[in-house]
Image (tube, rainbow, N blue to C red; front, side):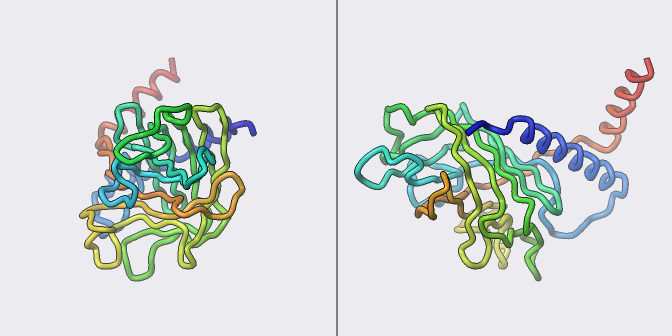
Length: 234
């Protein structure tokens, strides 16, 4: 399977343009929009309450490979030095992308084999993204409709698709009570995935924390736009 690099690049560029435009407009208006998940770019980190930790992780894909005769747990350490995982959020799209160190989780570390290394992935939720009624979270009301991929140290590219638990396939926020997901006092992202065209394997899911990347000020963005426009006129 060939990784769709052109499509991914276009999606990422579109996300960033949308986000920057929204940030400029919001800054110029200088008005609060309420306690909602802000559109923007987020840096993703490990969640402190993953069932398979240590090591800590932000993504888990069990049986990504059937490497042994037992149940193979694959986790991905979003906070490792080799990792950089981000997410762009707009009112209709959640785009998770980047790279993470990971592999077969053997408890306290990764197996020293071919599957331990840097993985690259890209996943876009653009079907069923909507605010949670009566709350400030966002969720995805879809099942087997949003897609992406993960590339592995073996050189394989494995398809990913969202999987609903019967209510939603992904949620971003701090739960209905604003107390945080699984004890984390902040924004978390969690949801379920299928991989490789197989039925759901428990546990294969997102479980990360998200930190909004500070945006440039409106004046700074306008200054950059002015510099770019000046260069074009020359």
